[in-house]
Every structure is written in C-alpha cells, then in structure tokens.
Length: 419
Image: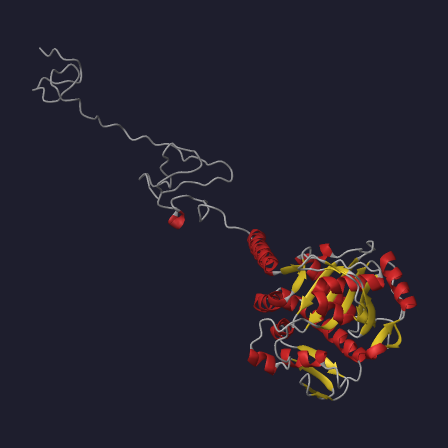
C-alpha cells in the first residue's frame, strides 16, 4: 500500500527532498511566470525599456520591480551610459560668463605679478647716491613737491668711441651741469622753470659731501660753478639759498643715459624752428618736424654757440625734455615690456637720485613734465633783470620771490620768466 502523501509516487528516491539523508541540497523548483502590469514612472521621470517582450503579444514590457528613477544596465541608453535622460558628461559645462571670469582673473593675476616684479626690479636699480640730509639751513616746506632736475656732462659708461660719436669731448675730472630745471608739482598746476647755468648767484657756506668739512662761502659766481665745487648737494644748497624754495627731490642724468633713453623709446619727434648747424655739439638739422635719435637729441639740447644765448638753449632743453617725458609716459611704452624694460634700463643705469626718492616720486616727475608739455602746466625761464660780470645773467629777485611765494602757498604761478 502506498504510504506516501498524495502527489508522490513510490519509486527510487533519486530526487533529494525534505528529510533526505543525502548531503546534496534540494534542487531548484520551477516557478510559474509572474506577469505584472507595466510600471508607470513618476511624472516627468524616465521610463525604463530594455526592449524585452514577455511573449504575450500585447506590447507589455517586463518590469524589474525597481522604480528608483534610474535603472542600470539597460541597452536603451545609447552613449549615455545606460541612463535615460542623464547628462552627457559627469559635470556640467561652464557657461560663457564663467569662462570669461576665469580668463579675467588669470589676466589680472599675471599683470599683478608682472607689475610687482617690475617695481622691485626697477626700485633695486635706482642709484640713490645723493644725500640731501647734509644740506644745511633749509627753507620750510611749502605746498606740493619740488624737484631739481639736472643734466650733467658726465661721460660715465661711455667708451672713447661713443664720446667721439656723441661729441661730448674727452673724460673730465670734475662734473659740470649742462641743464638745470626746477619742477614744482602743485595743487593748482605744475610749473617747469629753467635755470640758466650762467645765472649769477651767491654760493653760500656749505658742508662737504665727502669730507664732511665746513667750507666758507666762495662769494658770487655762476650757478654751475657750485656743482663743479661739490656736486649735487652744493648745487641744491645754492638753489635753495638764492630762491628760498625747498628742494624735495633731486634727479640727474648723464650724456650716455640721455641718448640711450631716446633710442629706447624709438626717438622723439621735434619741430626744429630753423636750420641749425653747430660743430661743437654736432647739431646739423633742417627746419621742420623730424624724429631725433639719441645722438641727434643730445646734439640739439647741448647746442649753445649757434643758439646765440644760454636762454634760447634752455628753451630748447625744456621743449625737448617735455616731449621726451610725454612720449615716455604713455600706455604704448608702459604696457609694452619690449619698450618699457629697455627704456627703464637705459635711464636707471645713469640716473642718480636722492636717497628718499621712490619710484612713485620718479613717476610723478615724468607725469608732471608730460602735463607741462601738453599745455596743462606752465614753463618759463628764471625771471631775469639783465647781465652780470663775466657774461653771466642776473635774476630779477622781486619776480623770483613772487614766483616762489605762489609755489609755496599752492597758488597758480602767474609770474612771467626771462625772454
């Protein structure tokens, strides 16, 4: 009699069922197919479709039972990595505004690094050799800032061949001044005053710049004699003593540096008023507008004998130095490293300044000269009252005092200079 429950047959038990003593596990049982209705995704969400047909022919699609909004491994995603509606990249592309901001920040950083590097390089190149601290009996401070600008006949850095080419003459034991100007930067405008080197002034007692000794006044003489005696400090002392105008900063450039700066900026355009030919300075020009190179520029500002007087010579110097400053202090020079570095290198090599002069002071000096050249300031020769012994020129002290008073008070300078 069959003792097994319904559904079982009495046959050899080679199927391992429940209660079997065999060590092998029970085999997988076949399960009936479960058919579910298609899952409707949330509104706006992707619908998963891997193309699998359940065989019922009704168009229904097999649903995995997962409805997380993203289904992995499907074949319908194309090159989107199996995601329906996923972005094509792992991170969103930067907008045009974002890319512009990045470029702008990069440019600003580069300009900042370049500017800081240029500043420290130029600052280290400045020759701060003039100690105005030893100048005695100095006038009181006035409004604005006053510079004493000097062009010397220094041959420093020039070879014998260059001295011959530039018509500077041979080496000299002492220095002399070919150009002297006062530049006053005031609240009511900038004023550039040329000091004739033959000005007849009193050279006061002074302290030797190298020896530290006290020297008595040598009396009255030409202004450039003070420079020959004890250089920049005695020249500064003499100008202050005779004008009662305090000199805040001193700047001096020699022949070689002057010519190199002109060449570095590509020459300076000048309108020569008439034909000029002078064998002493090497000047040889036809009247009219023309661009002067370094050699020609030096000959033009040094031309004295053909000019007829020291006054005309100082006018030419004013005109040229203002044009040079105007051409140097331009964006095309300042923002172009291929012009800026050669220009600064040429000038800084031979430019001597006082110990308190900063690059900002130097920049102010050039911009002020440019403003005078552009008609925003006033340029004049020192007011004169006639000749003096030895062919020198006497200052008109009444007008000099009026001019200095206007500078010190910050008023606009209205005094007219020598003709």
